[in-house]
Image (cartoon, rainbow, N blue to C red; front, top):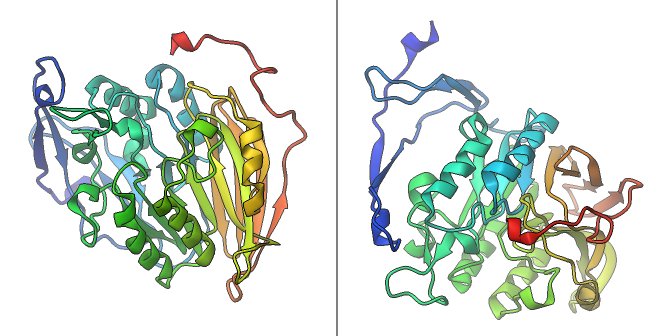
Length: 386
């Protein structure tokens, strides 16, 4: 009899005129959103969506987070981007089969290929089906969520007209309005997840980032954004001063995980603790991942990756020509990281043990005894098909 106890909440409707951002005439589309308030922690709720009269969706269940630190896991995806409905759908579904109890899904940018292509967004939502409605989504904005529009040039891209209508995300009032719902922070059962926008106003985010990293209340810190700090490709490396400040903040505030996308390959590396002079030591500090979940694939520039060695960065595991997803699990002072291929094969693994009292960490590498995937040892394909 639970439907008889349900509360009705009227949605806010946002009308989007795609004709204004596309070269062709389009019918307006409408997006609806509600914010549930006064929810209790660690409680199972059910909701459905309808016209208020005759047409209703199925009832969908979700559980709110506990108020205190408690074990949980989540799934992290790199770029889906291309051929999402056809080829990415199997990845998100295999991820759910692998971690059916995952609390949320983090998408590290470039969810689709063309920022304002309504049909591509429809494919992204269709590919995940009820999963998008059931687990919490942490979308990170990528460069493909920006596009030239109106009088804008290629270097003056504008955020997708569909981003904010589709995702109702936290608004950080301390940031410029242009960054609202693209930069935000969420605490979940002892873990702080900070999403940044590496595509716009990078300098404006740094002071806010430092403040978020300085806040007490969480024992694990994760930062996620689209463009990698340690890019696997030399021509895709972004070495501006503000991103260098991000990197310094990660070290100063003992960030545990940095989760990224953009480069359409898999690289997992780590950096050591820096001494008071900024010199790399021998003790592990921050875990960096660049990953891809969609079919568009790039090669890793091995020579370029070696240039990061002077900073103490070490590459532990690479992967090319392969679609991946990652599962991160937190339980007290231990975090387990597992990376899987689209077929559910374990490809990479590590365990971090951290003293909450001292902040010191130890990492155990648990890389399976399988060959690294490269362009040379995987099936050849034509990029023109994507």
